[in-house]
Length: 544
Image (cartoon, rainbow, N blue to C red; front, top):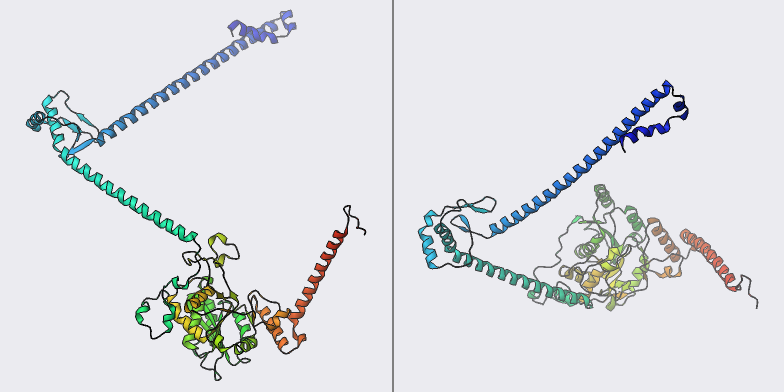
């Protein structure tokens, strides 16, 4: 915008009446407007100059950045060149010289030999590059440097050949190791992909366990170092439990229980393990070390009162159930081998002890001599990592722990009935049998290695049976009684059955009321289902 135009632009806003009157006031106003126009033009001009300066500074900064990138590129090139030259230097007489690949004639070498003492023109830089101090030296000095280089060429070749041979040996070794690893992997995959049923003779420790039962067999057939050597000792030992029996011990209960289950143990002593009601039985409660020191104090007081607690020095965990079962077998052999039968039982089991005693007395001697008896599991498979869920996670067994794809026949671990001969034979074979975390499967493995046959009975329920069910009247054991109250009620119902007194069973009446209410709800649901089925396509009752 030109200066006159900028001055005249404010006049557009002057009222017409003031211009026509030509008064002094109008002239003054005109001068003010003119000054305002001049100021407006100067501000606009300064703004344009400032913008031009900013654009110019910006272009200069971009030019400087471009120069900086060029300089960095040159520096990288120089650094790469220096690194390459440094790698091509050869160490000769504690100094570095460039390596020449071509051979020189004997005349050059002789000429260089005469001027060896004059070769001082090479200086090695600290950053790996090199330079010549005096580039105007004669050709004799250059020949001297070349002769020094070729003086150690043979030594360099020997070293390089040795390195090549060493690298070849390393490559050969690596390739062989990879080959062996691939072969092992293929064999492992083949072994895992193949179906591998249980084989007692291949289970570690690979011995003929039956030889342990024959004293006439040479000791050479038995390994001197057992794979499962027993290393645990009792903290509390009821060693006199079976010595106090005057009429002999017909049945020994080894009850696997948690340290904190004091009420359950008291209930068991007062119900199915009552030694006053059954004087020919004895009961020992097997426990591991609890996590709470106060619990240990209570267990000691419990032992002082009842004299029937076996406290071992391993931690009381689910994974140590095999240790708990094994410790019970070892204790029975050491301190109660007068018993005719041994029962390994959980503390959540209901047991009809009188029915069990009669069941064992009615059993043929040939069957009861090497008895391994209870609820039989046949043709079962281990639970692997791929099949775990909230319920089966505690039963997971890896292939490293158990390589076979099937389990041998074994008895449900909550209630295992064994003759004393079976217990004695198992105690001999256990040190030579690798343990696993599944304690009932482990007893099945030991029995299979000894040639002991697991036998089934329908009188043991591994899932649980309500006391008002007809089946309960003949059971000798039933599982899943989580509380002491339910266990006592089940025992009271058993006594009412024995005495033929139905009115004594409050627990039975409670279950009867619950089942009748449930039956009424089911009948109502079935009634509405029948009505829905009899209606036509439009919701009307069908006729005919």
